[in-house]
Length: 254
Image (cartoon, rainbow, N blue to C red; front, side, top):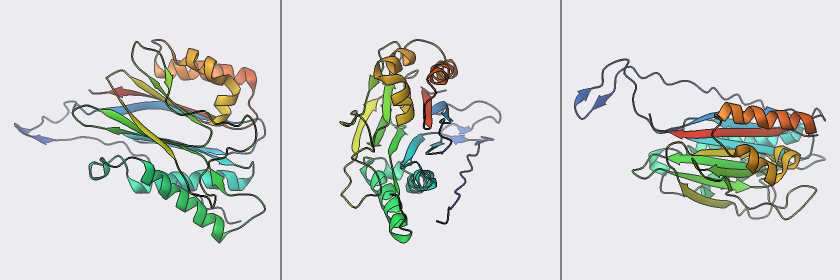
């Protein structure tokens, strides 16, 4: 199989001068810009076969896990995220759509690659995706396919898993990108307030820690990086076999 390496160049936007209603914004002065400030990473599994990939942008965060345990698995995850980024679901002209169309685009990309290059193992992937809408009442839209999880952690409140846990206990998830069957992603939206957080975790982290412990670790006022460190410490004690990705983002407005 020819492996296509897709590199995401995530640049930093430097604002020099912004024109507003009262004229030019003074150069160097911070500009209020609602966004998701994220930390995250992939804890590499003991089996040594990469499966997870993720992308972080100012208002878009997504993670994917290729299923199957071969090099095709990681390629499937990268293909899915490439399609998500190309859809640009965080931009204003796409704001009124739910994220079903974005998940369908990722599904088509992985399926097309599977048909072009059939192999001894499936080319399939999971997907968890969130997008921040900078409206008068900010909200977070999400889409979920597979066995990862998306958590909403309101400031001062109790973390809540937004996505439905899969019905299976072992083996590949029944709903993934890339199979011939029709895809029905789980989509939804939740209102956000400054200081609220969202966490995306792949199946490796879900299996290593479980929902109960995950909820405990996401609770509290520790910074996102401190929270990520605690999750990594506990995963190190468990030593998950496969990749385990965790991304924690905080909604800020200044």
